[in-house]
Length: 233
Figure 1 (cartoon, rainbow, N blue to C red):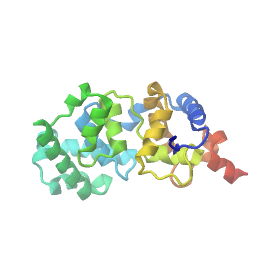
Figure 2: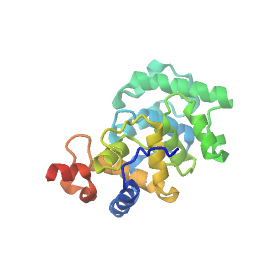
Figure 3: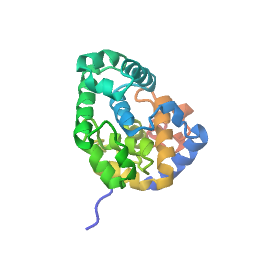
C-alpha cells in the first residue's frame, strides 16, 4: 500500500529552487540565530525560543547565563529565580519550570548535566532520547541534533512551516503537529542541504516572510509562491 505524501505535488522541485535562491541571498547566516554548540545548552536555548523573536531570545539567553553561569547553578535555583532572569522573553514561569524538569531528567538519565553521549549515537537513537526530555518536540530535538550534534536533520520550525504553506510546498490545510509532515519535509531535502536551507528559511521568516504583513515585494522566491500569486492575480 502506497502512503499518501503530506507534501504537495512538485514539492521537491520547488524546495530546490527556494534553496538556491535563499542561499544566494543569505549565505547561511547561521551566526544570526545564535544556536549553541553544546547540546544541553542548545536544548535550553530552544525552550527559551518559544513565542519570541531572535532579538529577545538572545537577550533572554544572555540574562540567563549572567545569572546562572554554570548549569549546576541553574539546577540548584528555584523556578521563581529562573523566571526573573527570563522576563524579557515572555512565558518566563512556564519556561523556568520546563528547564528545571529538563535538567532533572538529564541528571537522572545520564548521571550528570551533559548530552555529549549523543554525539556518538545514531540519528534515530539520538532523536528517541531527546524526545523523552521535557520541553523538546520533533523540531526541538532536530535542532539540537543539527546545531550541536552534527546530524543531518531538517527541523521544521514555525517559520519553515509558514513559508512552506505559503509557497504551496505543503497543502493549505496542513497541520504543524504531524510527525509525518516533519519527516516528509526532511526526506525531501538532500542531507547536505538540510542545515543551510533550514537556517536560510528561519532568517527569511524573521526578515521577509513575516507572520503578519509579509514583505512579498522584497521576496526572492515570490515567483514560486502560491500565496503571492493568488493575491496578486
